[in-house]
Length: 148
Image 1 (cartoon, rainbow, N blue to C red):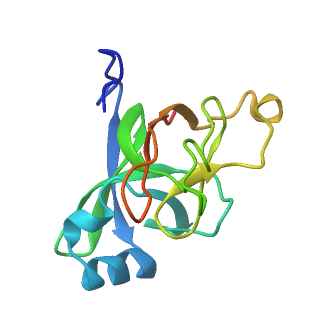
Image 2 (cartoon, rainbow, N blue to C red):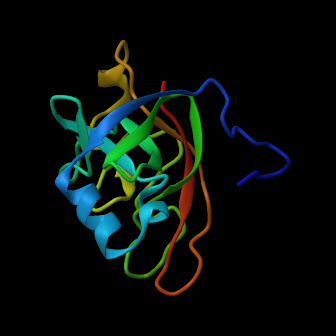
C-alpha cells in the first residue's frame, strides 16, 4: 500500500500467538483463514483476542490464522492494509482520520476512536498513518496503522 514511494510494511513489528475468540472463529468458518488477516483485534479474555465491541482501542492486527484456532497478532510496529470503516456514501477516509487513535468497529474493521489524542499521551495508542481512497462496490478502504 505504498503511497508516493513510501512503505511502512513490517517496520518495527513484533508478534505474539493468541487464541482466536468466537467471532474470529466464526468469520473463518464462514469464509477462510485469509479472511481475518489484517483485521484489528482486542484482548477479550485470558490469552484470547477477538473482534471486540465498537469503539474499543485496538490491541493488534491479525497476521495469520492457524488451523488450530490460534492467531498470530502484530502488537507493535507498522501494519499496512488494515480494513477501515467507510460510510454509506463511500467518502474517502470516512471512518478513519490520519493522526487519530485507532479503534475496532466490532466487525473486523478499524475506525476512529472517540479518545482524544491529547488524553492518550503517555499510553500506547495506535494511530492511523495513512488512509487509502474508497474503492469498489461494496465500498472498501484500507489504512496503515502504527501500533506503538
